[in-house]
Every structure is written in structure tokens, then in C-alpha cells.
Image 1 (spheres, protein in one colour):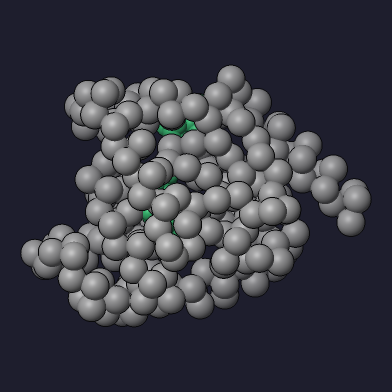
Image 2: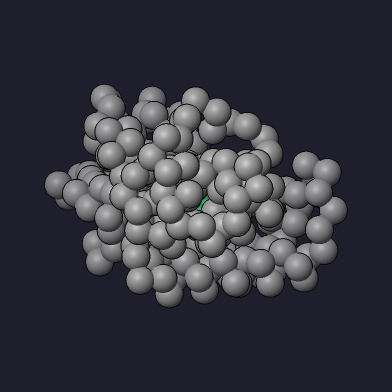
Length: 209
Ligand SMILES: Nc1ncnc2c1ncn2[C@@H]1O[C@H](COP(=O)(O)OP(=O)(O)OP(=O)(O)O)[C@@H](O)[C@H]1O
Ligand SMILES: Nc1ccn([C@@H]2O[C@H](COP(=O)(O)O)[C@@H](O)[C@H]2O)c(=O)n1
């Protein structure tokens, strides 16, 4: 069984995905980390993010055993990931790994931008998690402060808006809800309430099928 979660930056996809996976005994993949890891390779080697060929090579030879590295979660890496994720060969190189991950038993939760539309178009349940940009920026601001990154709220809000715009308007696998996705707006829901709402959607969807 596959649960696909998509949505804009800092909407709570990863938090929800991990919680659902733990609850259901499923594997969980935060696919944004793959793009962040590719960007990290380029930045570590001093290669400009505009070098599409180098980005594609980095994606093709990506070592996925270090996706838990804390430096991947920083604000700069999110921005860099958003640049290289627009390159089709980068996306192509990461596709097979994601699809293979989704085949695990008893199930898998994948979160990202194109899970319901491209990576797992046949997913059993598709959720599109969203929240107002100001609320997402507030959450990310808190998170970064806790991590010791003292970035101004306004800067984070501007970054989120820019990243969403780039992700939504790129020609390849743009961020959008799949036609059969159920949208959950978590602007006024804390993480517990979002989890309960998502579980109710999943239960309802599975009972119908
Ligand atoms: N419903 C919620 N209410 C309040 N805070 C939340 C909620 N969901 C997640 N958070 C917090 O918001 C921040 C962003 O959440 P998370 O990293 O899960 O978002 P994301 O969509 O996976 O982000 P990204 O797109 O950058 O990968 C985290 O600090 C998380 O703890
Ligand atoms: N399926 C995905 C996941 C992520 N991206 C791109 O990576 C950037 C970072 O992702 P986070 O989820 O960690 O914020 C994101 O802004 C996207 O550009 C993607 O294209 N597809």
C-alpha cells in the first residue's frame, strides 16, 4: 500500500508522513532529502547549481545512505534543492529509487512535490497538505531557531514564497495536487489534529475501495 503526500514547502508533509508511517508500520521517505543531497554534493565540490550535467551526474551516483545528515535540513539547502530539482535528468535519475521504495511491504509513505502525479500515480491514498504561507513561515522559523539558525521570519516567508513559485511553475513535474488527491489545509490544525484528520481521510478512502 502506498500513501502519497505532496504539498508546498514547510506545510508539514514530512512530520505527517513520518507519523503516519510509524502508526501504520510503513516505511517513510522524505523525497525532498534526495534533492537536498544532490544539491549538497554540488555545493561541497564548489560546482555552480546552474551546471545541469554535474547535477545529473551527482543524482545518478547519489549515496542514499546519508539522508539523515542534519546539514541537509538547513534553509540554504532547501533553496539549492529547488534549483537543481527543476532539471529533468536529475528527476529521472532519482525516480527508480523512489518507485522501488514505494514497493515495500506492508506499505510506504512518500512525501514530496510530485509523488501523487509522477512517482506513484497509482498510490492508494493521495494527500495534498497545505497551509497559508505565513503559518508555514512561522513554523519553519521556530524550527530553524531551535536548530540554532537565526534567520528572520520575513526572510523565511520570502524564501518559501519564492520556492513554491519555482516548484509550481517549472515545466517538469511541477508541484500540484493530483486530480484524485484530497487536500488538507492545516493552517488551523496543530500536528496532532493534522494527523487525526489524515488518518480519517485514509480510513474513509480505504473503506470505499
Ligand atoms: N500541523 C502543524 N502545526 C504546527 N507545526 C507543524 C505542523 N506540522 C508540522 N509542523 C512543524 O512545521 C515545521 C515544518 O514541518 P515539516 O518539516 O514536516 O514540513 P515539510 O512540508 O515536510 O517541509 P519541507 O517542504 O521543507 O520538507 C516543522 O518544524 C514541524 O515540526
Ligand atoms: N518530490 C520532490 C521533493 C522535493 N523537491 C524539490 O526539493 C526541494 C526541497 O524539498 P523539501 O521537501 O525538503 O523542502 C523542493 O523545494 C523542491 O524543489 C521536488 O522537486 N520533488
